[in-house]
Length: 302
Image (cartoon, rainbow, N blue to C red; front, side, top):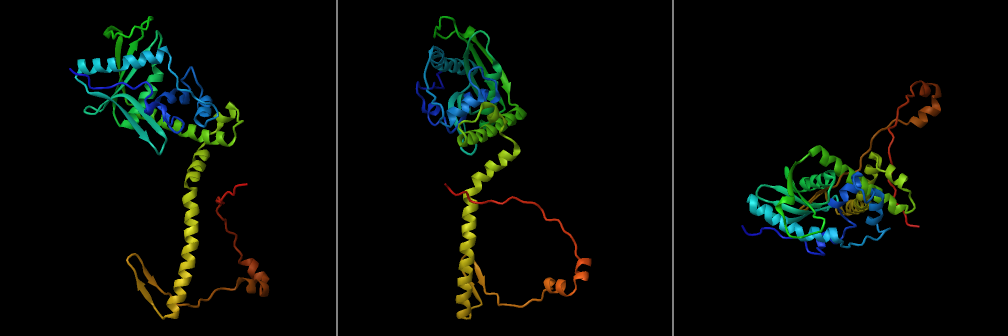
């Protein structure tokens, strides 16, 4: 059977470009605290540009790049599958999944890992759960290829083991929540570059989430206030012109504009009653509770 997949290029832009604005599968272990090589705090400093991340190759990544297409080719040939490389981007949540293989007929994920003697499969499975959520598939194949000590790049099927990893919706939601919290922490770290790792890791309450959402809505809220002011001015102007020309109603493609005539209404003068009958006023005075609220004010740049 002919090869149906393709490998990532040495500097594939899907992997290296705009890494600061997306969380990728390789970031998930650090965010979940599973990585031996990087903490969430260190990852955040890279994402916001406090620390420059160089995308460099070493003998392990080069070996993986060479073997990955061979492994995918072999799996496709032996199993009759059609795994191809693909990229999935969620702009709303800033998540990008570069997958080693997806069979679009069976909607099965393929994750290829070349590893040493004692691999931690939890790291790989966490990545796969993010990918499966983003793709919408229920099953993944984890292709584990044990790396020879001499780094021989000739494919040997005896070194390959495939583990089935079913989608875990609960785990996927925990990963998504952790990613959301991570981005919130990044925003706070942008504001205070001197924040300690301990302080960084305490951020991410429900209130922080709500405030971040409000921050995203702020431009629309401010625009709405501006539109409401403009609406009031236009209504006053149109009322004046309709009155001058004795027009009661105007129909437009979008609106029916009706002039409502001035009217009088009666209201109880509580101030006068209090002054004339203070005892009666106090007798019928009722205390009511006013609900608390938050107020939004546009922040002016200093």
